[in-house]
Amino acid sequence: MNEKTKKSKAKNPLYVVKGKDVQEASDILDLVVKKLGLEPVVQFLQTMLKMILENVQSYPTFLAMKNLLDELMLSFLGVFKKFGLA
Image (cartoon, rainbow, N blue to C red):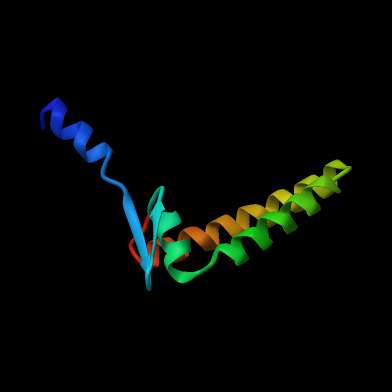
């Protein structure tokens, strides 16, 4: 693959088409989130995790949150592997 081909592939964006609206997606995960309309869910989860992590004030609480987040990430990876995205 020559340098020109690499540059053209890097500039080839992903798009999500919903009716008359066309949105650019930054990666595969962003494409799936936009295609399925999961932006509000992702925003809610981000807000909840931020609020919970702001209230961590001791090491045992930190460990509990770390274990919870580790389990959450493992379940997400399992879903991605199931659909061939990981």
